[in-house]
Length: 639
Image 1 (cartoon, rainbow, N blue to C red):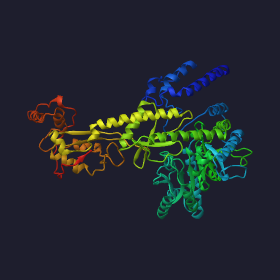
Image 2: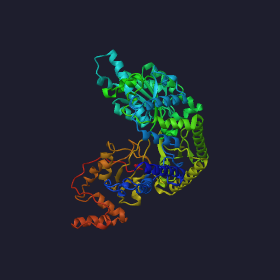
Image 3: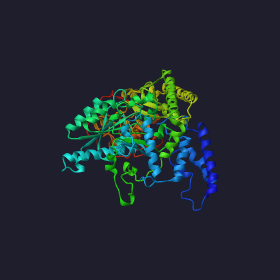
């Protein structure tokens, strides 16, 4: 591709992108593909000869697009926004063409200095104290663009770890780094993002998850209590991560309560405002920032709600020397004549190299202006409020957590499995896309206004889709005998069929934020003492037994016999030397004829094979005697 063809193809690509975004409502928001779909549509090996650009673009539309989840769609309500805009796209196009690696000031002065500039702009736009800004060469504070909030949290945790180790060694110089590190403990809310936990895992420090209050906020009293307990155990509290705008319900930790505690205990106080940070451009939302003056660092993602496309995370620190002490590696080939006089961002981050991300952020701020960005934010909040009112107008639904900003969490009234089934059916149809969360044991659907193209008409249409699907789920529930009679006594099943054999349960219920897989459980009851005693004695208190709650599989609360099937398969009643319970019981229960069991026993006495037509499955035959077991109660209930 030469310059002339690049100009031609570039113009065509601009048109393709514009058409894609303009007509995105016409596309199914969530793809209908399965893992590995692309493998069957593409060659196993790379092409030896060049291919035509037209052929490549045909494959984009016919192979790639069917597998895309369209995050810019007005019907995309999952996760948090991941917006772009035309100024952002154009800015990154230019940055990618320049393709400088801004690890030091000398490697590309404009790359470094524009980043300093836009981070100061952005810090002022959201109301940060001046201590976080780099306004002159003597400023200790300043901002840096990281790739993600996950990386920003990890960078700050590592800086806090280095600071804590140095502080302890000043008092006890004989202690090694590894000895101190093993005693370090960090804190966050049980609503904090999973990246906080991951930062602790990679940093090899203990992470303490503190229970949030009824508003899903981390409070000062609970933090203070946790710190006191850990200090009594000779642990060293060193890092607290507060969240402004939690993933589950956009809840806000109380900075004004947490900050003074961190200050008094000499603990690094980090604020993760990944989603909500953009909202602080609007003064009416800055009350959630109250107490930020206590923070040592704060980060948010312009790549979420600010229409600066991924990746772009803004992070500020009060004392950049803490970052230098943690990440300073200064070989001769990276030194320059202005080292020490200018910021070298390689000392503020984990990677050496840095993309020219500041350019797209600069383009967006200048093209929209503060007023344009405020209008965009307020419109998203207004649309979320509209959706909240629609949910509240239908008594079949409830909103278990207060709406904040552009996120509404809702659920069908009743048991969790109803909401779970609703979400699965909505996503399977692909007309809207949402994800779940678990809030204090309640399964909820997260509905986020994510797209700048979303209108009131889109919200009304999506609510109609949700209502209609909910009606289907509720009607299915009423007609589903499984849910009409959830508890059946073992004695009652024998009234239906004296040879009632096996009940097979297969369940798979995703929970949020962590997925809990279902388990295959086989419950045997043949009216025989041996099987009844086996289940109650050998399995009831087994470590593999977890209670199964109706429609929901929760960690530690599910009956699961799959890990003990060896016991069932390896034991037969003493009265039958070779027969397997599975064969006899399945034969009788599948035909509903009690005589089949007698026929089965008679065939075995004569050495004849069992009736293959009546078999549904077969276990390995064993010869064994069952040791006496304690008699159980026949009236036990099962789900």
